[in-house]
Image 1 (cartoon, rainbow, N blue to C red):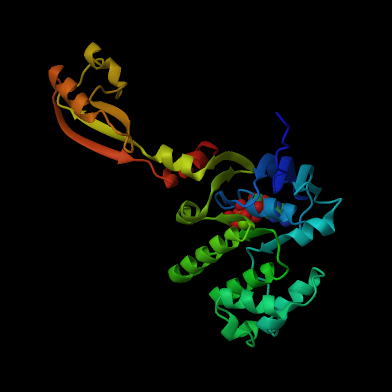
Image 2: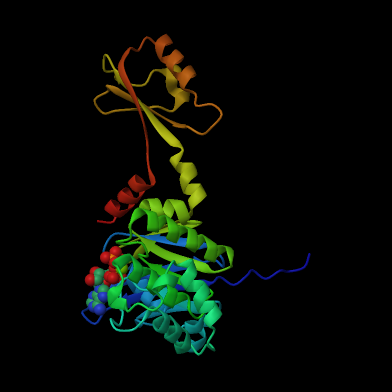
Length: 314
Ligand SMILES: Nc1ncnc2c1ncn2[C@@H]1O[C@H](COP(=O)(O)OP(=O)(O)OP(=O)(O)O)[C@@H](O)[C@H]1O
Ligand SMILES: [Mg+2]
């Protein structure tokens, strides 16, 4: 067998830490790999460290410790190379009020030493529905248009890796869908995308993998499909007419849990499986002579998983 080297991750972060001059520890030994061509969604509450992480990879904030490689290049030693590969749409909108859309995007491209390419800039502006506004000044744009302009600027030098820090904050529902569409198009053209968001729906819709960060630590990284599979698990709860002391022998095989008060039995099953086992369970419960007064089912959502993960860390 010949040895095939594993492809270099697009971004490889190990043992990354950040302590701001205030003494605040914003990142605590973060390990994370982002694969080429994937959409990676980073979820986390306010202050979790998302923007800090992105800013370090983009060279805007200095790390305190650890290693960050972008396509194998160290972010400090190969700063120029790394910066040319990366596009960043920052969380905070920074725009020059009197500059026109066209000029601003063309200038961004020039900043990275790329030769002028009006056809490419036109394509970007058209994709982002900003072509009609190309001669407008920034101050004449709406909030959503400004955000799209930030994306156009980030794409101006044809980066292979794009960071979107809260790309759809303050963007209306329809436009948000358009932006998702655009981001998918970028992925199809081979761009690696890392986005942060507070909208769980956005992560569900877009991401190949999801990472959760809380208080400067990565608490989960998982394929979205795997997370969704886990979400296929549902809980059936039976309220018993009479409390029981223990689960009867004849029901042991069902792996039930009994509430402390002995008045509730809970059964976990896979709602996407071929058999849920519910029919069998109810039959066996009847045979065991246990009566129930009510039954309910519930499904955990990505939002619940997220809230629980974040709460555990508090
Ligand atoms: N320049 C700074 N000096 C000191 N502390 C900072 C600085 N920038 C950020 N922090 C702190 O670091 C922590 C992480 O901030 P960061 O902006 O990375 O969070 P975030 O996950 O992006 O949050 P949000 O969802 O609100 O954008 C916060 O507690 C913040 O107050
Ligand atoms: Mg942020």
